[in-house]
Image 1: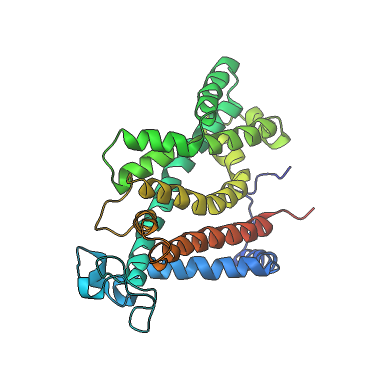
Image 2: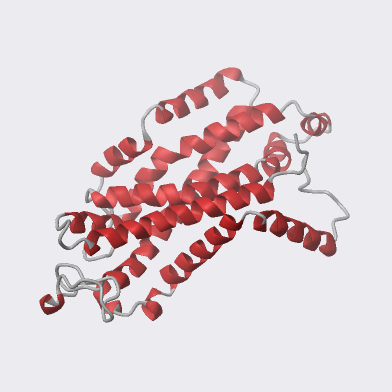
Length: 297
């Protein structure tokens, strides 16, 4: 078990630089991690700067050009056009923004909530309180996340924010259960007992002693989960419970294109490939982060 280094004195700027170099070396040993980093960086660039990069930015909105409808991939339209003449490549670039917002928005909500619940349940001395928190968590875990997200989304107006909330409700228990297990195993460690003997408050023990030792696992799971959260958001869009047309969404694009398979295959296939690339990119990156944060034995 690692010990808390959050407040270790005497760490110089050179020590931090050497630590970063060692972390990068461990990360770069796995070549697929580099591939994942490149993929994620490219998606971030495309998602943020899509008005400057997309060949036809106007196609991301309520645009219609029936004379260019259903065109296969060509030099003019690299990934072809959809049934109303919109460039699929441009719409995928714009859909990356919504996908990234979905992943980041959900992670920003579920990580603090799940972490706080797990810390309190794992450390609190009153067993009935800890048990009550974890039984509530188990109730959420008993329902498949996608099913729960679909039910919650169906009760709300279909928007990007509401789909974020639906996925968050389904996903936070996984973090609570992970942090609960780590906190339960750490609460009897010497550094925690020392802090208790010195009269440290519960807040200090939870957030200055225990939490820093959980950050590596949290960051690794966050990176690995990003792709799957985006996939769940695309699943909600696929059934019409996410972003609404004419806003581009990868799930909606796949759903619309599936009606025209196999003749106009490009309408559904390329957005599907984009979803696959996102998931692979974050999974490869997450593997590298896990290797980077693994303590040397």
